[in-house]
Amino acid sequence: MNTWKSFLLLTTIIMMACSNQGYAQEREFYELKTYTIKNEDQEQRMDHYLEKAYLPALKRMGIPHIGVFKMHNDKFIPSNKIYILIPYKSLAEFESTEKLLALDKAHLTQGADYINASFDNPPYERINSVLMRAFPDMPKMRPTTVEGPRKDRVYELRSYESPTEALYKNKVHMFNEGGEVELFESLGFNAVFYAEVISGDRMPNLMYMTTFSDMNKRNDLWKNFSDSPKWKEISSMKKYQNNMNKLDKDLLYPTPYSDY
Image (cartoon, rainbow, N blue to C red; front, side):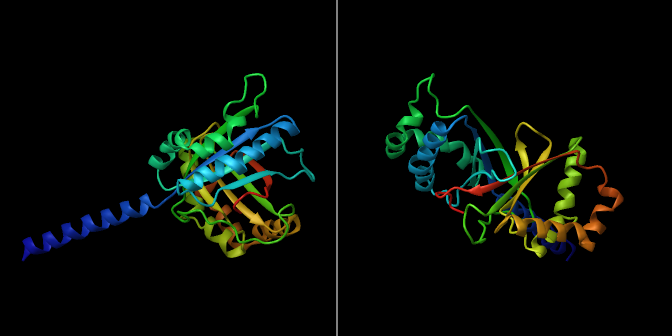
């Protein structure tokens, strides 16, 4: 009987481990590519490449829901960046993308101006790339259902940097086990993703994106967040103190050819 119980216990442990591993594998990976541009000519060339060549090629690979965004220029600087948010099911899919792009004839044809640009007439100034892995509490990207004119929508991209790796892990814990993601969801922030940065130029940090129909809605919801008893409770916990030392936020809108 003891042997049989031991066998059952071992079997249960193995099944639970496999189940947890499978759940972890369901967490998506995201690449956030940012193109810096210097003038309208580069902006037009980038728009053409992204709309006519790059996004269609990614979709032929089976990658859906690609977001393309620019900066709001109301209270902020005129858009000199284009942001592309790409979800991947695995690192293997991410790694294979460039190889497949090089073999895609339609991509090579439609993207010829970008691909074959000369050294003295490039379509952009530089590319920045950040690779992320989704939070356990939101393992897959959820394209927003926010409606209204695209030029009025606000896609808020935030990056929280921490002083050390240990404090960064503490901030990630605050979002997941601590209930910060749950609070955002309950207030209707329409998050697209929450993710840990695994490769980038501002580590250690996490990033997330929330969406609003317009700036007034955005401001109202952030006030609700700040005033909520749940946030006051979470933010006052001793274990979560001083786990972030820098916040960057970009207020964006989707281009006409963005999937959301």
